[in-house]
Amino acid sequence: MNILTNLTRMWLTRSTKPFIFKSEYDQQLPFETCSNLGLYVHIPFCKSICNFCPYCKVLYSKEISDTYIDHLIQEIHLVGNQCSDKKKVTSLYFGGGTPALVANRISEIINALNEHFIITDGIGLELHPDNVTVEVLSVLKNAGITKISIGIQSFQNKYQRILGRKIIDMNSIKRALHAVPFETVSMDFIFALPKQTFDDLKFDIDTAFSLGANHIAIYPLIDFTFTDSNVKAMPKKEKRELLDSITTYCLNKGYSRSSIWTFSSEPEAKYSSMTRENFLGFGCSATTLLYDQFKINTFDVAAYCKRIDQQMLPSSLTLRFTQRQRMIYWLFWTIYSTKLNSRDFEQFFGVPLQKMYGFEFWIAKKLGFLTENNGIYTMTLKGAFYYHYYENFYTLSYINKMWSIMRKEAFPDLIQL
Image 1 (tube, rainbow, N blue to C red):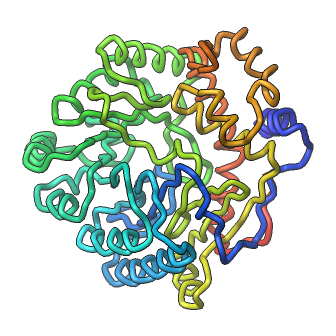
Image 2 (image 1 turned 90 degrees about the vertical axis):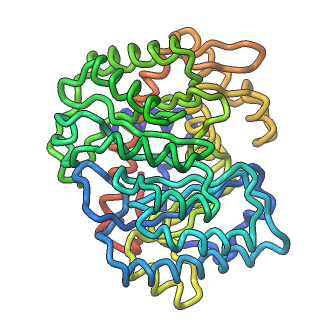
C-alpha cells in the first residue's frame, strides 16, 4: 500500500522528497490574496462515539464545549484581524463531531466570522439524525445556516446495527424538514457495507429524496486502523459493481453529479467542504490550505485552548509545498468534482496543464479514466472507481498515519508521508 502511494507521489512530484509535516507554523497567514477562499469550523463534540468514525471528536459536555467555543471565537479574531479589510470568501462549513449540539452558539461563531469575512455562497452544517427537530433547525436557520447535511449512513436497521447506530425516525425527520426548509438538504450514506446490494442503496437514496433531501452523498467505508469498527471492507469487484450501478441509477433519474460521491435532484443544491482552492480552518483538527502551505490544528481540546490563551495559533503541523506537490494536491481535489478545466489550472499556477502533466492525462484518456473536450476533462465511471480505489490507498497510507499520531500527541515534532 505504501509502495503504491510513494511511487505515485515520486512520479507526479518528480522528486523522491516525501511530504514533510513539521511542528512549525506562521503566526501571520498569507490568505489575503488567496482566490476562492473558503472557511471551515470544526466542532468536535458528540453525544456518543460511532465506532466507524475517524474524525476528531470527544464526548459532549456543556462546560467543555462552552470553553472550547469561547476559544474558537478568539482563534477566528486572531486570524481575521490579520486582514486589513473584510475578505470575500466563497463558503463556510461547520463539521464535527456534531455541530448541532451547540446550536445555541452557532450564531456567535457566525457573527465573529462576519466581522472579518463576507460569505458569498452560503453556510453549511452537519447534523446527526437526532438533531433534525423543528426546534434545532429553527435555531440554525435563524443563525444564518442555509445548507444542512444529515449523517444518515443507512435507513435500514440491519446496517444501523452494524454501525452501532440506533433506528432512525423517518417520519419525524420528514416533518421537521417540511416545517423548516433549507436551500440544500443533504443526506450522507455509507456504501460498501457487508453484503450491501444495489437494492439496499437504491432504497436509501429514494427514501432520502422522499423525506425532503435535494442532495445525497454516498461515501465508501474506509477501514481506519485506529477506529473500533470491526466492519470488513467489501471486495474490489463487488464494490465497483455497486458504485457503477448506483451511479448509473442516479444519472438515469436525472440527478446532477457534483462529485465522485454526490448527486442532487436540483441543480442549485450543493454541499461540499473539500473542493475548494484555498481555505482557512478553525478549531481542533481543522486544516488550512493556502497557496504555499497546508497546516493542521492540534486534535487536543485542552492543548488547543492553552495555545489560544497565549494568543498563538493552535497549529500542530505544517507542510511547505513544493510547486509540484501543490499541483498534485490541486489536481487530486479538483478532479474529485468529476470535471477539470485545464484553464483553471493555468490560471492558478501560471503554467499550462499540458506542459506539466500532459503525458499523465494522455495516459488517463487511453485507459478510459477520462474524456476530454476543448480542455475540459470529465471522469468516466471507470475513472471514478479507480479514483476511489486510489483514494483508499492514499487515506490509509497518509491520513490514517497522520491522524493516528495526532490523536496521541498534541504537537508531534515531525511526520513524513
